[in-house]
Length: 137
Image (tube, rainbow, N blue to C red; front, side, top):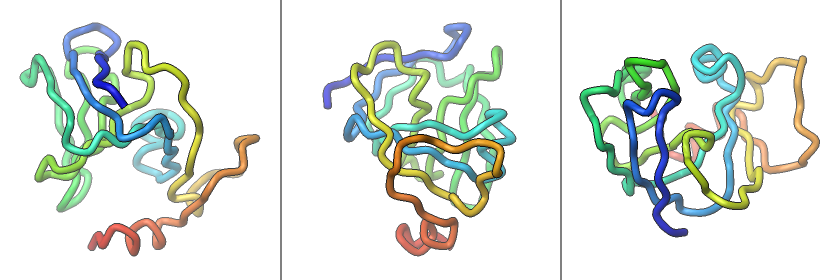
């Protein structure tokens, strides 16, 4: 895919990123749902992300190996990333115009509450399967 621009709600944080594909992943883990008041819809951008105003980004260390980024001004969730900056999973809805996206997979399906579900039938992984697939501690 090509490079795309994006920003938070208030515009304090702007970025350019190159998603690996047009496939959206959804995370149902408790941390994502609490942070976003619902599931986290995201695009894998690898390490192809550049921010214009790093000082406006708040970072929350959600584990020993990953962090979550948000705008300090408006609170918009921007990303989930490995602390070594080798992988950014960017919020799909922060992009200005990404074109046609498609739901591809759901992770932490074992933490999804019963009050919502998606019509699309896509690959689903439990938290244990996610950690096993990515070699996370």
